[in-house]
Image (tube, rainbow, N blue to C red; front, side, top):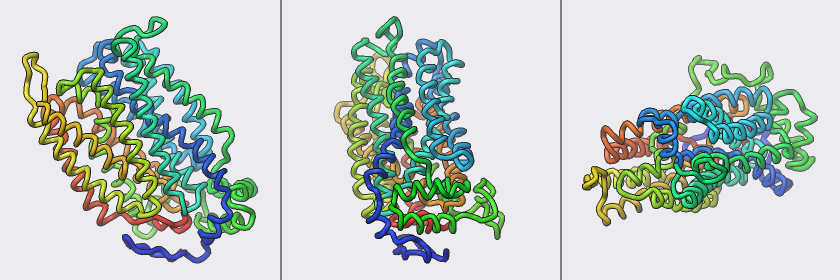
Length: 487
């Protein structure tokens, strides 16, 4: 392959790469969409498992008698599992297959949802949350990779963006179920049904979609690119024929083989440039995308939304309802990204998102700096400033979910050459979840030390820096076949 790419430049088809238009014309679109839909249930569980903690924080504090630091670790513990799961998922998927890893994730989702609800102490709870984190981490990198490897370039971005729709739908479903359960029970800490507190049922609701995911996975094929890499050419050919038709399948198989090294299976060592011995530049870009997606503080809203709004005077019920509204707004924003990602490209969406987040985060920081102490010693905002903060927070969520939320995962799933896709995802996924862990663990401490205004000021600065990162280092991948990706 000798195609070179510059930011924003048009991409010409590389020699030997199957013609995208003919491939698109013969594709079994219904099958591609169906199997991608099953895979994205993993994204739904990713979102649900991440968002369900939002409504259980007070219940955890009461049940386990934990302080701010302990609560922060209980909430953030899942992210340690996410980091481990994301890192090893790529390597294990290169060895055992994308589908196999997704099945393992489904099983861990089931065990984690059950165990988190029955936990009687922090240590037991953290164990099950870390197990759920392993599932989330694996699903977070394998779902977009699997979709990218079965979808044609013409609408690969839209299908991969459905992953983010699923994530946000999972978050919204968690927020909605949390709100409904707390509403019926009276509070997250009171008994709801069968003698168990409401917050425990918030976790158990996840058992239903997790079971659907496990069953659905048995009906989808393995990634043809994995099958080629593992020497199972006949199986790969069969899957490619089902996906793209008999004529296009032969060309596609040749292109996949040409993009893989002849002398060995994919491994972490492939991430190094053979000439310099240093990490490939494309890997650093992947790490940068993954880390910046977290440094803008989005998961503070996802994990601590109820606590955040209660800290400035909203009731628990109102705070949980605000979460539901934010979730619904997020779904609308991701659908916007779904429409635009294959039309205007990935890079423009990232750039606009960075600008929008920098502005709205700055407004939130200024708004929260106006908070005052009421007679009970709690922070409160005036009606006008509270309205501005609420509007800015939702605008921030819109900018994130119309850009960095879905596009980062789209790019990580497609930007790496075939030989290093699993390993590149492993390293980038590890960086993403470690950054997530750091942001989530630090927020309760920041809330006490520099309060909301200082916290959101830090996130605003990170969003501002990301504007320049996108402009200088991110390459456009719209319309390119995976076999054209250069490292």
